[in-house]
Image 1 (cartoon, rainbow, N blue to C red):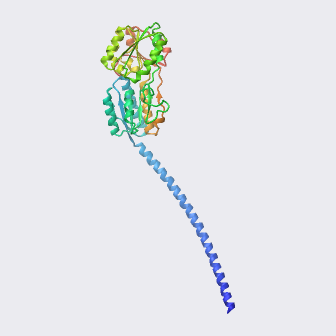
Image 2: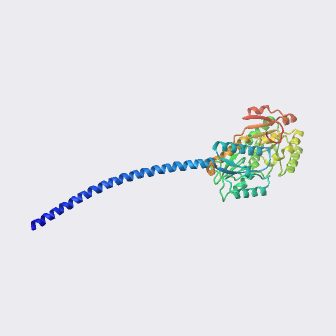
Image 3: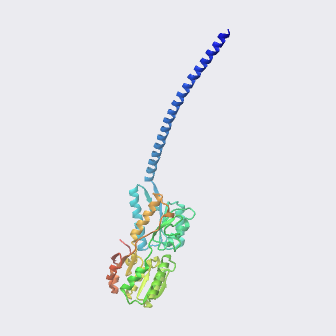
Amino acid sequence: MKTRRILAITMALALTAGLAGCGSSSSTETTAAETEAGTEAAETTAAETAEAEDTSAAEETQAAEGTVYKVGIVQYVDDASLNQIEQAIEDELDAKGAELGVTFDYADYTYNGQADSTTMNQIATDLVAEEVDIIIPIATPTALIMQAATEDNQIPVVFSAVSDPVGSGVVASMEEPGSNITGTSDALDTEAIMELIVAADPDITTLGLLYDKGQDSSTQAIADAKAYCEENGIEVVEKTGTTNDEVMLAADALIAAGVDAVFTPSDNTVMTAELSIYEKFIDAKIPHYTGANSFALNGAFCGYGTDYELLGTETADMAVEILVDGADPATMEVRIMSTGIATINTETAEAIGLDYSMFESMVTELIETVTAEEFE
């Protein structure tokens, strides 16, 4: 009896051990299978994730290609230079839109402030309410108003034709404008214009300065002109005006003062009055040197500085970089377009009897024009 119990116990232990052994083997095989299945599942998940990401990227690309961007364009006032810039901006936006498969809708959001701050502030309010994607102000006064209107909402602003972006307070610096604003500058090389004046008339004794004190674009250029004249013993006569009538009276005063030549920087107030004053200077045989080619188009003897068509094109390109490529205006360097282009009105030059052949070696390009209201 005792022997059978021991045997039974022994057999039971053996059976238990055998079952335990079988159980261990099955568990190991199951774990291996589960691991393999888990690996396959992980690989499948990774593949599905990658595929999903590719699909998402493709959908984003397709969405980008069909995107409509609302672009606000704000013109300061009608004049030949600023109108040329606006047209160049619109042409480039159309070209880039066709190239990228997107639409830049500016037609519904283009305004002209007519040099009136109340009107421009209302335009700014309207553009913010319209939730435009970007605002492109043309000229310094417009840029300042659009800058103020977007401080809270941070709508990107890309200005065009701001002569002194830092001095006027539009940007913090040329390299890193800061906040939501950047753009292009038509900064004027005033000394180069002074050199043209002296080259054409080495005996000049008196220079008239004609500008609008309220135009920030004139401030630095006038200061530079005064400094040059002081260094070179040239007397300065200043006359200013804020309206067409005032500019006409200022022109009369300069003629009465007997100045040998007149200088005007890229001043929009005088620009709009040029067609009303150029014949006065012609009759007095006084050459009018200015900071933009549009002055020469409108009758002034010489317009020196930037190609405004290229300026407008570059402005539009910067707007596209922000809208499509995601560039940050705060860190986009303000782009200064190359100057050195002299535009001479040949009809005016002939009428006042002034030889300008010496300019060819002093400028990067010499362009001849005749009097007209707008560029073709």
